[in-house]
Image (cartoon, rainbow, N blue to C red):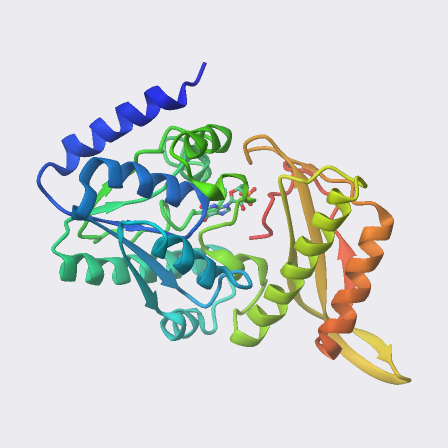
Length: 316
Ligand code: XMP
């Protein structure tokens, strides 16, 4: 049986032993994994830790402000780096999902290397959990997708990695989150490469804006449906933007717009998943809101009914 309190004691000891008198930075995304890793590292080394949140322009609606607020409410050293332009220019012209992940992993590391140098740190703490390295093919050689914080890391990376959550699955991380008082413990999982893997084809500021709004609508309507007792809150629920265009009609005129996919799954650990049953009324509201609120850029909304396997949860 997993015991969160024992885990916290052991992890703090492990971080102290590895970092010694040194300094570390922690890559904070605001998600539960990185916030828990930050809490453990802070317990271990206090002021010798700097939490760095990178605003890559790919985060969910309101997320950067939310994370800034969470970090400001804690006593740990922290910094927000505005790197939107760097990420969009690095992603220009890239459509292959693995290449996208590698470009993003590399950008993150280059930024962390600079921040670590400025802070005088040689260690990088990451909230990597077991599915990240299992899916990246570590130990199995079977790459499903290179998680940006594992398979997406550049080979010449200069920092020493500290990964206290490496052996845990999401349910265990949530237990540890509650044990160390992290508020984000019930938030739905969100991938490290963020909205870039929910925007198939080339990632542009315009397409990210579309998928960001669509994700916000899906989240809002599914939370409403769940609060109204129409469905259980799924493990994950979001929107995906497809690059293909199709013909539509609005106010008697032809449109040639993009397609948004509604994705919602039930899962225990993200390793397998079953599509969630969203009531048709909620689907209709989501569809009408997306096509009304996103103008002519989206003229079609579809619902993904596949499980994992054979699909994965995210589309890339
Ligand atoms: P897939 O899409 O492979 O995802 O079925 C399983 C779970 O992992 C999340 N995910 C990621 N999390 N870095 C992360 O920290 C990543 O690169 C990454 N890719 C996928 C996904 O949202 C799901 O919860």
